[in-house]
Every structure is written in structure tokens, then in C-alpha cells.
Amino acid sequence: MSDFMERLVSSIRSSQILRLFLLGFLVLLLLIPVAMIGRLVSERRERQEEAVADVSAKWGRAQAITGPALVVPYTHRWTETPAGGPPVVRTETRNAIFLPEALAVRGVLDAEVRSRGIFDVPVYRLDLVLEGEFERPSFAGLGVEPEAVHWERAHLAVGISDARAIREETSVAWNGDPVPFLPGIGAFAEGGAGIHADVGVAGEAGRLAFSFPLALNGSSSVTFVPFAQKTVVEIRADYGHPSFQGNWLPSERSVSGEGFEAAWSIPSLGRGYPQAWRGEEGMREAIDGSRFGVELKSPIDPYRMAERSVKYAGVFLLLTFAAVWVVEVLAGLRAHPIQYLLLGAALCLFYLLELSLSEHLGFPGAYAIASVAVVAMVAGYAVVMLRRAGRALVVAGGVAVLYGYLYVLLRNEDHALLIGSIGLFVILAAVMYATRRVDWHAAGSGSQGPPARP
Image 1 (spheres, rainbow, N blue to C red):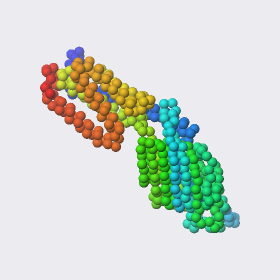
Image 2: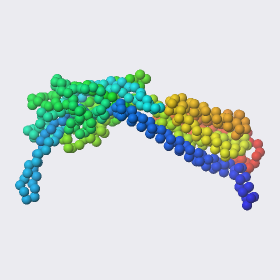
Image 3: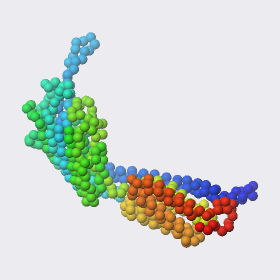
Image 4: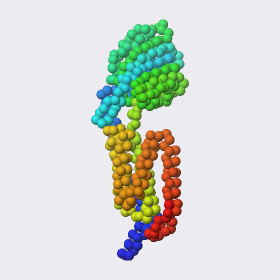
């Protein structure tokens, strides 16, 4: 039995195929701490989101502007016939919603970054001017009799997702007459929270013009809806990292390090809801699906970058182990599995260093420090592991190239597949070239003769 175990151990040490299986097992084993670091990245992201929510709750959340819409009440009558009784006429006040014929929104967004602990939260002050006009509402297509309409109770409603963050009192110029806005969205349920103004509609009124300013605090993003036959939105901001969101991108935009300007011009044909509807029909889902706007993004999200880099950990471990194994084959050496584990632990530590440093220094600086530190550690240990500084330099240089290659991948997300496939092709070609003269039959037989000349 003892002789059998000795022969088995000797076979494992001498067989390159079995060593490759052993290295594959070590890579799988090291993916356990990598997975733990991945979960840590998710936990830190959740803490960041909590910090954003905390700051937003006090300053102002992401703003979603819905409207304006004209809400006109009417009396709905119907007849019920109870069993065995005479018919009974029932009445109920309902509401019809009318959208503007034209809407122009122009605004200036003044952004700044607030900090909560180690986390940064982009917030803004938004000053808007909304103007446009309604055609006189027609109930012909809604099945409502003209005498049932309560024109005098009509009100203009504007949905504001975080109405608490309104900075100043405001009023609407309704056909030239100022009418103050009141708290609450009125009967415009699709708007969520917001404000309204009791404008009324005179019997002889034709087109109904409106104009009003709106000053809000908010954070992270601002969105609008295309509520008119033609909606025009123009935003100018001093934030240099916008991400345009929603079903429509700006028709014109200009982005620089100092800020951006964006303009949308959107017709009503593609939005999925009509110019007028009865309140009970419910258009909330269609309205929410038509939003567009801009999000204030961080220049480089360290958690997204860390999350993406961790996905390449298995490939990095495998390629580094393959580089050491090739040096072993060419130099006729045998590194111990414990040495491979320690080398892999250093590579895993890179991701933890990258994450922790990026929260304080930003991603580029953290990546540079973490990669230099790990490459230096790998170089120092590889001198002992491979017994020569030249061999260690080959392995450390390979690891340095891999980190530079990973950084290019992370910064070029759109071309990551192309860059990745070309890189793997080049690496495989290099391994094939370096081992082209190796006699694998002799290498796998346990012979410790001189290595093949490269």
C-alpha cells in the first residue's frame, strides 16, 4: 500500500496532464474567495444606495414632471333598476383629462455633489419655465353631454414626484391672468403627487394659453413626459457627465467637461395615449412608459467597475497559473501546489484592494495602486518559487500586462468582447509559440533531463 501511494504521488508530480488538472482544481478553489469579494461589492453598492436615499430624502429625490394637464369635472348619470322596484337615476362627478396642444419646457440645472460619509451624491437645483396652450376642450369624443360639464371647476394639474422639494411659491399665467398654485394634484390621479391651480374655463374661451415657472430641488435624475401634440424640452446644466434616458434621446445635444445642453422635440404619435380621456380609464402605465430625461452619472462608478473586474478573476488566475506552468515546463522545475495557492491569493487580494481604495481615491488611482502592489508581490514571491529573477520577471511582467489589458477592457465596455477575444487569441498564440519545441512525451514521463531549447 505504501509503495502504491508513493508511485501515485510520483506520477502526479511527473505527469503534466495531472498537474494541469490540479491547477484547474486550484483555480476553482480560489474562485470561492473571489465570489465572497463579489458579494462584498454588492454590499458596498447597497450602502451607497442607502446614502443616496438618505441625502435625497432631505434635499429632494429624483424628479419626474408630469403635465401640465387640464382636468374638467362633469356629471355622469346612469339608471339602475332594482329587482321589483322602479328605475333609479344615479349621478356621480367624474373628470376628463385634456393635454396641451403645444408645450415648451426650458430649464437650467445647477448641479453639485453632496457627501454622506465616503459616498458622493449628485444633487441639483432646477429652474424651469413651462408654457404652451390648450385648445378649448371638446367632450364630443368622450360621450359626455355639454350640459353635464362643470367648466367653472376646471383646474390645471402638474405632477411632481417629490413636491416637497419645491423651492418657491408659484402661480400660472392663465390666458394672461395670474392664478396661484395650490398643494395637491387635484383629480389628476396619473400625476401622483404635485400641485394644481383652479383656473376655470370661461364659456366663450377659445385657445387657453398658460405659462409658469417652477423651482425644484432634486437628485440623480429628472424626467418629463411628451404631453402635447408637440413637446419641446430644453435643458442646460453645469454637470459634465449626463446619461440621457427614456424612449427619446435628445434631437440636439452638446456635452463637455463643464456641462451639457440638450433639446428634445417629440411629436405625440409615438407616446401611446390620446390627447383626452376620462379619468376612470387610467393612463398611468402608458404615461410612465413615455418618460424621457437625463441622469447625472458619476464619471466612473467604482462599484460597477469592481463588479466587472471580478468577473475576469477566473481567467486571470488561469492565465497566471498557465504562465508559471509554462516556465516550469521550459525550465524543468516543479512548484508546489501551496506556492500556487499563495500566488493565487495575491491575485485575489487585488480585487479587495481595488474596491477599498476606489471608495477613497477614485477608480483610476485605486486600480493603479492595487495593480502595482500585487505585481510587486507576485514578482518577489516568483523569485523564490521559480529560483531565478529572470523567470520571476517573465511571470510578473505577464501579470502586469494582464492588469493593463483588464483596465482597457473596463474602460471600453462597448468593445469589450472584441478586445477580449483578440487578447485571448494572442495569449494562446504566445503559449503555443513558447512551447513549440517541448517534447511532451518526455515531459510527461517524469524524465528530468534538460528542457527543450526554445
